[in-house]
Amino acid sequence: MFGYRSTPTVEAVLPLLLTEKVPMIAPFSGGQSLHQPFNPYLFNLRASYQDETAKMVELFGSLGIRKVAILYQEDSFGKDGLAGFERNLAKHKLSALVTASYDRKDLKIDKAVNAIVASNPQAVLMACTPSVCSDFVKQVHKKGFHPTFMMLSNVSSDTFFESLGEDGRGVSVMQVMPYPKDFNASATREFQSVLKAMPKPPPFSYSSFEGFVAAKLLTEGLRRAGPNPTRPKLIAALETLRNFDLGGVKVSYTPSNHDGSKFVEMIMIGKRGAILH
Image (cartoon, rainbow, N blue to C red; front, side):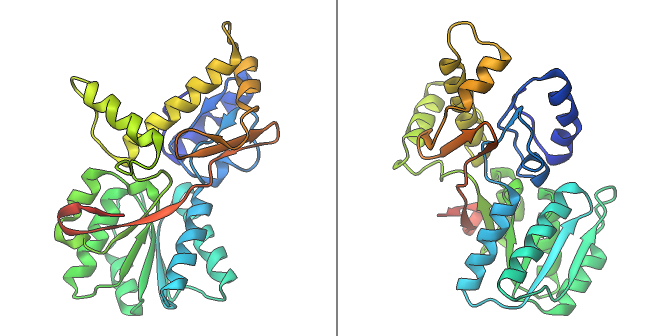
């Protein structure tokens, strides 16, 4: 299985992996449920949301930010982000001024906006869908309040950055892949070359680049599995990868650990959705 995205979607098929003994490669989600408990048929590529929250708290701590609020979505994805925020804040002897949530069924955030603005935080840590994250930032700005907004990598897309308009300036987003225009990484150079050769290339973005790196991972697994690959051979082949460089993203797997990459960094949005790296 390849190309799956979103935590609830992947969680729904986890039992199938075990019963059918079919491998899933590089799901587009950092949910902790994809890492623990260990699933011998699931091979993660990207770092987990827990890794992202740890890096996020570390970064804002270095900026002297102490007063924070949390916004999260009421589902497995949002609660995963919340758990990461709270645990990593506690490591720095901090706690949120207020923790607000919204129901993914109606996406109403009025109460959350009012509660967070009233708490007057320096920064808001956010585990929400792109549309809600964008709406939240705009509503908070309309109230004349301009804290630092920090979001998980699930929102990352040109569409999201552009949807924020001028409200996006200064918004920070975690990333689990190198900047696609960073030519220091061989995978980004290869990615650019492939896109230029396509008559109708996909949108140039972190997401499409992650898909490209995921395809490189699957291809390497199949190459190592030999001329007549089977499910067991592919699994065994992937488990031989130790600190393997996919071109700027290093992955490691063992028979008891399929976490993949730990790469995490933060980018900021500038004027007109431009990425400040």
